[in-house]
Each structure stands twice: as C-alpha cells, then as structure tokens.
Length: 102
Image (cartoon, rainbow, N blue to C red):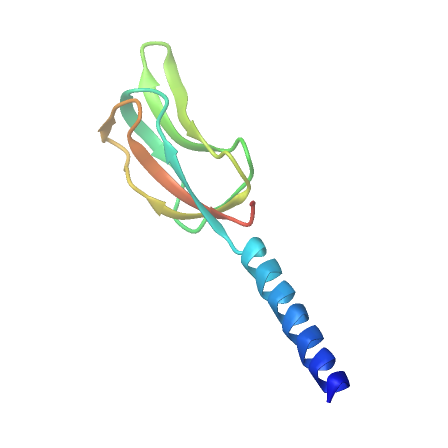
C-alpha cells in the first residue's frame, strides 16, 4: 500500500513538472508601438516570420524613410494595425508578434 502511494505521488509530481514546463514554453504575445510619428510607407505582413531588430513599420520623415517600429524578439507577426498611407503618432500600437520567448 505504501509503495503504491509513493508511485502515485511520483507520477503526480512528474505530471505537474511537465505541465509547468509546457506553460513556460508557451508562446508570448508582444505588442509593438511606434517610436516615431509620420506617414506610414511600408509595413510587415501578417504571418511573416521576423527576427529581433527587423523593421515592422517605416514612416516618411523630412530626412527620408525611417523605421518607426522594430521587432524586439524573434517570432511571427500575428496582427498589423496600420497600413501604408496611415498617419501614426509615437506610441501607437502598430503590430503584434507571437514569440516563444519567456
């Protein structure tokens, strides 16, 4: 009887550990906001795979095209909230990326 209880306890602990490991590996959604104001020239497409530092949105400025938002992690673009021709302000939500980063 005591051996059976130990076996059940070990199985419960292993199962709990596996569930917590899966939740840690779950994807995280990151919102990306514009760091500049301007007229949107180009945007990344929904579903695109991006690396950290990739340009998500370009805006036109007096000095020419400038990145207004860059990816802060590797991932997949799940939503884009702006389109070419839109006028955006600093701090506007422009894209959402799903990543496996913790």
